[in-house]
Image (cartoon, rainbow, N blue to C red; front, side, top):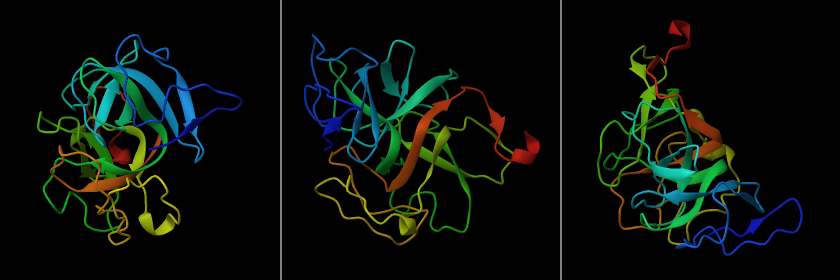
Length: 213
């Protein structure tokens, strides 16, 4: 749970862990920051979402689980807490998030820091929907990459103060899965520490290998 602040005095209805029914206490698209410099966007959830999953955000600041098959350009955020289709709340769009969910069983997609990975949306609908997938960056297979999001090397991070209260962080497998678990029952795989820099997708398949672009 993060307490939100602003560049000056800011009035917020609650921390990032709170979701709201109409009337919204904030305007959709409103932005706030926490004391660690992480940034959040206030969005209207279109279907049920869960902590640590990715959402696509349209021009009306409506959010839905991010899928690689969507084929639309949109912004990307990480869900902070459970929400239903009748609620609005905060998603993270900038900064470090240490528990982004994958759709893989234990072991995840990456096991060490010897391979460079590109982050891509989940390829098909699963439970939970909107999980993160990875692909080795050396491949030339067309994918829908998430721009502005990358795996964080946990060995270089000295202060993960945003760890959920029921979690423990492992610094092994520095660019791979860690043991931080989002506070939700809808979770099937490992999680990854990810840095977000206002991520987005273009909705088109492109080669991952830079030499093929």
